[in-house]
Image (cartoon, rainbow, N blue to C red; front, side, top):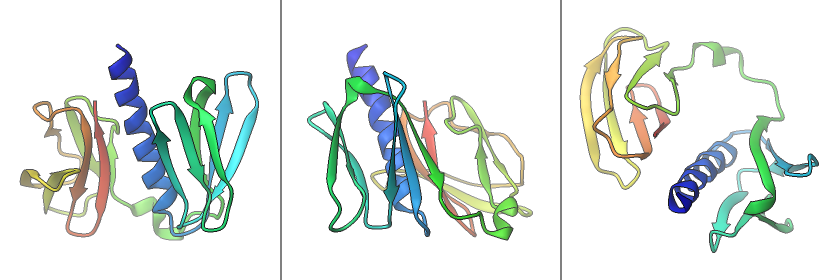
Length: 161
């Protein structure tokens, strides 16, 4: 159970780190502690989030900024929020629903029929196929982990539970 908990936290931190680190604009990382207090960190493109010895969540807000180490046992919730408004074309962006995925996923806002490839985080091609928007895609045979879903116009992150 303890290993499953750590694995889940690792996926959570990888996802948050990718979301915060890959944002074109600055993103806020909000950490809610067990005692109810909230700590906010401004994540720039040069910022990083990672584990240290599976005991601490380490937050580096950017080059030249202080490094913060928070004991994992003190954290209740972690969220990321964009500090700047969303681009106007954000509503038409392709998305994976639901994400995290258990057995079946769909690509929402996919234009027409497109070739889609799903890669494991280590670069292995897991599945390649053609799909139309909102068509069910079976990923039940995939192991738990983080995957990259590449369409003709974008690359998305998918978590398989």
